[in-house]
Amino acid sequence: MNLRPIKPKRVSDQVFEQLRELIFRGELKPGEQLLPERELAGSLEVSRTTVRHAINKLVTLGLLEHRQGQGTFVTTPDGQKKNPLATIIAVDEVTIHDLLEVRLGLECNAARMAAMRATAQDLHNLSKSIDEMRATIKTGNLGSEADAAFHMAVTFATKNPVQIHLMRNFYDLLFLGIKRNLSHLYDDPDNISTVLAAHQKVYEAIADHEPDRAETAMREHINHVQEWFRKR
Image (cartoon, rainbow, N blue to C red; front, side):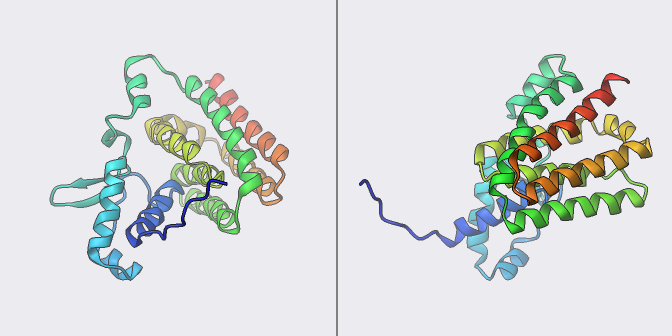
């Protein structure tokens, strides 16, 4: 057997993984400012140098960006100029229908994997996103950020790093780039109820660890969105 020695993780790697997880789950949202190094170091009970190393790795990955005189922020689509998907959208005449077709494949697969691998923490994050969306809508706002957070929480539950990176880049462009289109979707109270019910259905299938049911629930959800845009 080809066995390799187990190496303990460096503290900076653990900090890096915690911050990356918050970004991938949507708890740290695009455009949101990160706490100052001093506060992060205090909360995590590590040195500022350790925090700085972790942040620099996230900057290198394109997940965070330094803004002179302002601080460190979670990147937005405009800040990810090397994103190949952004380049395609800028050059070709990509429509919302094109994006939704890709979303259908990615998310149905994500829901299936999530149903097989979701932890108690993942289920908590999914439920929390649904509650946040419901609360945001009651205040008269769109709830699109909580919507995106729910779908990212599903993706994070797959535990597949490639799937997570793909979906995060995709959702930066889908949810923020077409916010104006989503506002029309949420104009109709019936659509809001349908979206919330669909999220709940996906969540319950994942919580019950039923892959087929989770995939079907996600497919029905995205098909509804596709159909709505076709009628516009």
